[in-house]
Every structure is written in structure tokens, then in C-alpha cells.
Length: 172
Image (cartoon, rainbow, N blue to C red; front, side, top):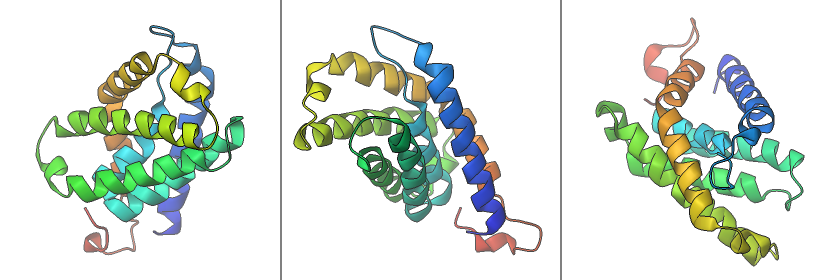
């Protein structure tokens, strides 16, 4: 990744984290809040492939982990796995079919929330399994599916090659 791409991704992660911790945290449906930080690795996996999806997932996850009381690295691990998985499974098909990023975001968000809850329980944070997990999964998945289109467009902007970089140098 070029320096310009890294700066753009850092900017997107920072703005998304700010939105997550201020505006989105106050949105409650059925006692659950959306988790838009999972959109970062999902969109990066769709746009850049498995390696870029994993890198953005780790970065977004560690940013969340630094602000939350859960074990450090838990969200980063989930983000890394989700970003890599989306990039590996989706390949180029998601970029070619209109509306498919929405379905991918829906499914990947379900996987991310479930993986986070199970990983939390394994690490001794059993409260993740005592909440209304179905409500959390539904709210996160629907919110991320709705926001998938704009997230993918923003991630395309972030991964756009710089002026001196050859156009074919990015995996798209």
C-alpha cells in the first residue's frame, strides 16, 4: 500500500470510529446498537481482496479495542478474520454484480457478531452470550447491509492509486 492509501484508510477508520462512538452508539433498536466498524474490513475485503481486508480489519479492530474494556486484540482478531474471509470468498464477483455487496455485508456482519460473542466467551467474557444475541445480530447485520454501498464507495476512494502509481498495480 502506498502512503497515500494508508493515510486515506486511517482517515476513514478515524471518522468511522468517531461516528461509532458518538452518533451510532445512541441509536438503539431492540436494545442493540449498530456496529459500523465491521464495515471497514468488509468493504476493504470487497474492494482490495483478502490481504487488504485483513489489514484494514486489524487496524479498525485495534482502534475499537483501545477504546473498549474488552480484552485487547479481540475486535482486531475478528476484524482481521472477517476482512480476509470476505476478500477470499467474494473474489471479483462482488464487484461485478450490483447489490451483492449488500448481501455480503449482511452475511459477514452476522459472522462477525457471532465470532465476537464466541471468542469473548472463550476468553472468559461470558456476558457476550447472555445478551439478546439475536437482536444484536439482526441490528448489526441490517444496519451494515444498508450502509454497505456507501462504505464500498469510500473504500474504493481510499484504495484509488496515486498519480505516479501505475493503474494496474492495485488488485481490484
